[in-house]
Amino acid sequence: MNTLNNIQIARSGLKSWYSDHARDLPWRLAPSLYGTWLSEIMLQQTRVETGIPKWHLFMDLFPTVDDLSRASEDEVLKAWEGLGYYRRARYLHKAAKIVNETGEFPKSHAAWLTLPGVGPYTAAAIASIGLGEAVAAVDGNVQRVVARWAGISDPVDGKKGAKEVQEVADAWLDHNAPGNHNQAVMELGALVCAPRNPLCDRCPLSSSCVSAFQREMWGVLPTKKPKKKAIRWELTWHIARFQNFTVTIQRPETGVWAKLWAFPETPPSKDFHSLGELMKPVTHLLTHRKIEATIQGWEAPDKDTMESFAAHVGGEVITWEELGQRAMPRLATKIFSDALGQ
Ligand code: SF4
Image (cartoon, rainbow, N blue to C red; front, side):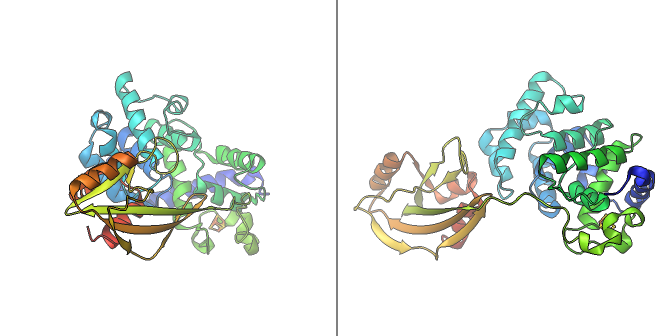
C-alpha cells in the first residue's frame, strides 16, 4: 500500500490537472445548490452524456426547488423517464417538498444526509461543491483511483476496503478547495483512470501511484465482493386494444417499477381475439434481475369489453396518446415504440 508521504504531491497534481482538464458541464457553468443536487442524484447510476439532456429538461420544467416540489409525482417520473432507477426521482421529489417546507436548503453535510435519497457520497459532493465544506466524496470513480494509487486490495464495497479508501480520500482532501478537489478525483476516474486501460502516462498521480509502477495491478484493482446472481423473471404483458384505446395498469407502490404505468400480466377473457406475440421475446436487465418478457396482443370487440378487462385487472382504458404521457418503465417504452409503432 502507498504511504501517505506522497499525499501532498498527489493533491497538487490533481489541482493543476483539474484546472486544465475540467469538462464544461452545465451544472458547473452556472453553479447552484439546486443544480448541483439535481446533477448528483441523476449521475448516481447514469452516464454524464445521458444525464446532461435530462438535467436541462428538469431545469426547464422545474427551474427551482419550489417548482419541483409543486409538480405531481407523475410529472416528475415522466420527466425522469429513460434514466431508470425511478426511486431516485421519487426521493428527489419528496426531498424537494421537505426543502420547500423548511424554507431553505440544508446547510451542512450532516443536514443533507437527512434528506431522502441522499447518501454519504451525494451529501459529501453537494456539501463540498455547493457549500465549500471539507468532506471527501467517495463514489465509484474515486474508489477506483484511490485503490489503484494506494494499492488497496480489499474489496472497496466491503467494510475494510471502504474504510481504507475513505482514509486515503480524507488525507488527500484539499481543505482550501474541497469542491474542486472532489470533482478533480472523480473527473480523473472518468477521463484518465478508466476501468479498462487507464492512461497512466497522462495521469498527474503516476509518479506516486502503486499501480503505475506495477502495471498488472490496475487490471485487478479495485476488487469488489462477488456479485449476487441475477434472478430470472419471466414476464408476460397482455396488450389489449380497441381502436385507439388500450388498457394500462399502475404498478404497486413498492417493488420493481413502483408506481410506473405498464400493461396487465393477466390475459383478457375469451371475448378478445388473440393477435399472438407482437414481437420476439425481449431480454431486459435490471439490477439483480434478468427479465424475459413476452408480449401478447389482443383485440377487443368493443370498448365495453375493454372496460370490463380494465376493471378485472384494476387498470384503466386510455388512448395510446394518453399512455405516452405517463411514466413507464424503459421496457414498456421500448415495446411502445418497437411493437406498437407509437
Ligand atoms: S497512474 Fe494510472 S493507475 Fe494510477 S491513478 Fe493514474 S491512471 Fe490510475
